[in-house]
Length: 165
Image (cartoon, rainbow, N blue to C red; front, side):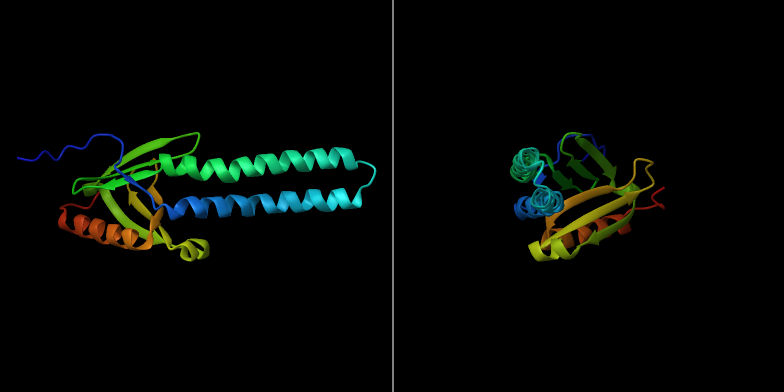
């Protein structure tokens, strides 16, 4: 007889390897505005050129570190798993969170792909329960895996009894 108990444990699956590139591009895009502002300021202000060059160099170092380290770090941390009994997630960067949702408690399953996710062939899955902690989110799945996961979870919730509350 198989036990239907679930326990908080590390999920087994990594997100798509393409998520690293996606996260790097998004991080780079976030650094473009401050870099552009600093460059324009440096060109316009001859009186403080030395300070502005130093600020630009520091910003470039921070941007390079963020764009190279963060995607690798997130890829190693972000994990997910779905079993017939539960959905497991692990996410975060500095503040890491591990969550579990019994399939019997799932209320909705959603898939979302923004323009950049579509460009990289990625999708996000959101599993909503009645939990006060909010929904479980799995970011950076390849599109086919996300579609398969949504189908599996939808079938699993339909097979369960009760109203998931």
